[in-house]
Length: 371
Image (cartoon, rainbow, N blue to C red; front, top):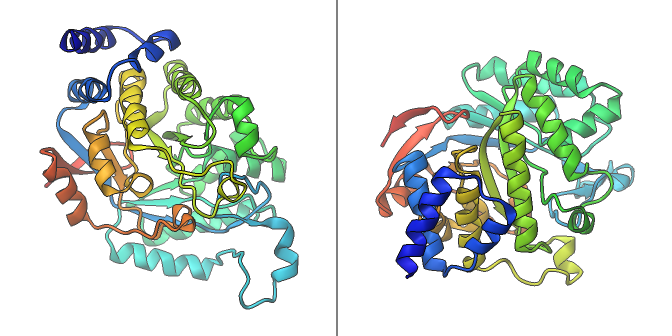
């Protein structure tokens, strides 16, 4: 009976868009059936290749006016003026000289992508970001510059009184090639209010901004943070809203479920989240992602930094088709004590171990080299 159910769902999903009720019904299956469904759909959607980019992260500041309970990376912007001259200050802003040093490190690593995100820092001008982008493109002209979460873009626009359209056009002129897709968190507003602050835009505004940014030719990833205060109804709702946005105004290159890393976050310190999500939940999230989003967003990406490398392999057997990237110099998840690193050789090994084909890709999921 279970095999029949698996075959029924695989065939049904290939030919239909799941609604909320159907997605919830899918969760009634046992975990192994969900894995098989997710993996079969992955094979149908993307084949046996597992891709990744060689990426280097530049986190330009951690001063932030948002100070979200879900985040361990930020230093509250309000304390900046008190620690300016302190040698052991918690907050930082990278100067252009600092950024040049990062660019030199990235160049030595032969990266294909520069990933730029930071805090909501009102002291940084649009000209600062333009200069940052121009420096990257000056020394790494062939590297894709993927910058800013959608809430960051909205914050810079509001802070400097510039429309999102005009801001994107300026940043595009300076070298921006794609957005990162971060900051989606979870769209359910009741949960969102508990894990973010009013400084961060609503889920509805995130989706609205994504449509506008995509219409201007800047594409990027889509994300969801899970494993905090949400439930599966919230997860399903989030995925369906992303899918509907993509159908209306295409521009999402991939979907990346981000497992909440609890250490050092206010949510953990307040006792509101005591444990990370289980492996069982991780598998269900990836199987659901493939079932709900796979036709409209073919690349379901597994962020090994958040999941851990072994669990990332299991996620690749449950619907995932991509390992995001090397994430050299990543600091946001690093703030939650996830001190981890990798190499092209290790990513290839992780992929080969599960019988898949490793491939280097660019930011836009064009495959460049097989291993």
